[in-house]
Amino acid sequence: MPDVFADLVGQDEAVAELRRAAAAAAAVLRVGAADRPPALITAGPADAAESAPTAGDADPGGAAQSAGMTHAWIFTGPPGSGRSVAARAFAAALQCVHGTGCGECPGCRTTMGGTHADVRLVVPEGLSIGVSEMRALVLRAASTPSGGRWQVVVIEDADRLTEAAGNALLKAIEEPPPRTVFLLCAPSTHPDDISVTIRSRCRVVPLRQPPADAVAEVLARRDGIAPDVAQWAAAAAQGHVGRARRLARDPEARKRREAVLAVPRRLTGIGAAFDAASALIEAAEAEAEASVTEADTAERAALETALGAGGTGRGAAGAMRGAAGQLKELEKRQKSRATRAQRDALDRALVDLAGFYRDALTMALGAPVAPVHTDTAALAGAGAQKWDAEGSLRRLEAVLACRAAIEANVKPRIAVEAMMLALWKG
Ligand SMILES: [Zn+2]
Image 1 (cartoon, protein in one colour):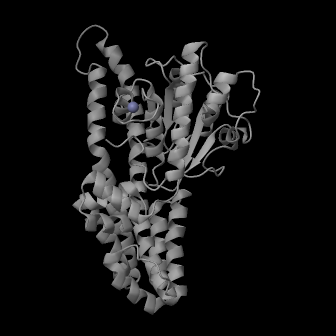
Image 2 (cartoon, rainbow, N blue to C red; image 1 turned 45 degrees about the vertical axis):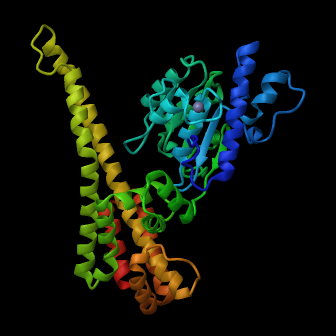
Image 3 (cartoon, rainbow, N blue to C red; image 1 turned 90 degrees about the vertical axis):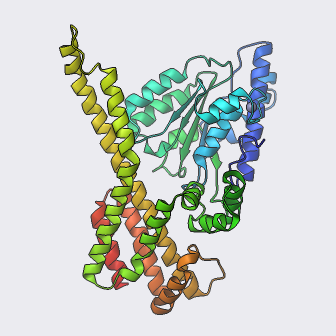
């Protein structure tokens, strides 16, 4: 039976550090059970957390044993490298009755299954995590762990915290309740992603983009995907484990990718460039809609039931007046989630397209690296001949500039049209 870290692909160093920390955390609990309430060392300002605590500390048992463990962590790495997988696995190891993340005990199983009472997972669905959500979370995280181990709060996409939410979180991290552990995930520790003050209180676990071979291996072993399909999907997904799995399994995802990779040969004139822009935007919208519609409908039905829609008793009229406000709030959240899903879908398409022009560039340079998209390698080769390295690079840069513009809140249609024109003109 593989343990909870088995799905962390190509991250040996990070896994070793997390195993040490889980063992140290288990030791803290043992010391605590023996004589006093356990406590962790609060991570310093600056980088004190990365060095061991000084010997001769007033708390020889607890302090020495907690050297590998701390209250607040940030998992960084490119999308798909497994930030949230790492955070969840570590949460499971903290709740593991053996302190190892065995993958079999109730603590491991419920954490991995998302049902552990002391593990809270924040997955932002909108474009940012708001302050009220964060305050409520921090408050609940301060309670005593019901399972007797740790309260763990996992915040996926901590880079999407609003400033106010970040401040609420910072307060909790600065004066953490003794048994609470915060696990943050962010693309990097750049101040744009995570505030300097939060970062200074956290230990950083950097994850790298896993090599295609490692991704292919895990797809074959864990998901039972045929090795040749796994190899193709791992390369096409450019180190993004979740994307590789979707490509290997979901024919719709493959179709969308093929449509995106057909863009370069369709750019035959200005009209075609605008058509290609529309097609790309509309495909992203359709994909996003398919992914959120079901959840939207279910949420609305659940809220209406909770609000007693159709009730006729005394007070029903007053309840419905309050309900209108709650439904409006729900609609706002759903709209924000839809926008986010559209951007994510569009970004995936742009990453695929960037891969194509990267292939053209490496071929023009004669670089001895495997192509990202083996199935369009011939087309990229033709592009390389026509455009040379310089023209290929300009096109690659146009795709990357489009991603950056959308990230900076330029209207997606405008950014994509500008990109298509640049790709056509070269
Ligand atoms: Zn376990």
